[in-house]
Image (cartoon, rainbow, N blue to C red):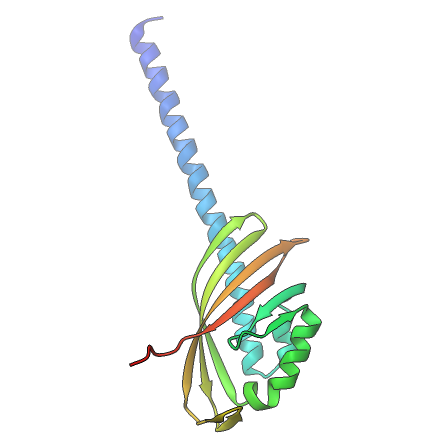
Length: 171
């Protein structure tokens, strides 16, 4: 064989290898974005369920053994307990509010695990009493949510959620 032909074959192999690597990387990004969309749908459904005041449906996003730490630091373990705890505060603190969840980002930890960050904006639809005061109609508060998702049997569920109240810094 002549050297020119050998060099051409090597160049073709290198181009094919580079193209293959590019395709693999592109498919990983696309797959990751697809999973991101699946997780966003769960959070979007939770927003809809909250605003319909359907906390049982809201809680369906959680796994059976999920943990939810609310913005007051209360530790709720297990889907049934999460549903029960929401039912205790529904009339005072959920029903008179509307929520907006804004997706910030997510990181796939594995094929079956992801962590996401969400901004929650809660608006009072009417005046309502809470321990220590009254929340006035139109009042808005912001929280950040960290949610850990787990995929089991091809279904994504929230395995853990931490809600953090955003407060203005002291003056």
